[in-house]
Length: 114
Image (tube, helix red, strand yellow):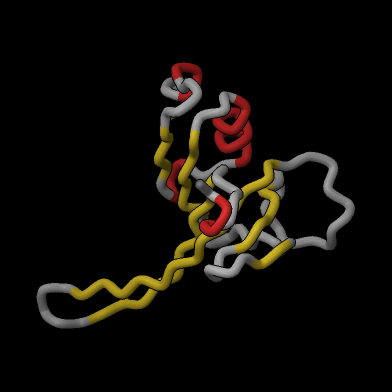
C-alpha cells in the first residue's frame, strides 16, 4: 500500500481496509490531494466534532487514535467519518454483527457537495 501512495495525484481514489490503517498512511495520502476512503481499526475512536445531516460526522484522525478532548490536538488529518453496521452470514446460517468506521477526505455535506 505504501508504495502506491507516492503515485497518487489529484482526482485519484485510494481505498484502504482496516489492515492498512495507520495515521502515517492517512496523513501521507491526504497530503497528495487525492481522495481517500479508509476503514479504520476498531481501536480508533474518532471524536465527533460536527455531526452532519446524513448521520456522518467530521473528525480528526490523530497519531494515537484515542478519543480525547478538543483541543488539544497537535497534529491530525481532518476527515469525515461514515459509520456502518454490518451483518455477515455463514453458509450454516449463523450471523455475526460488526461495526465499521470509514474515513474519507470528502468533508462537504451531501447537500453542498455539488
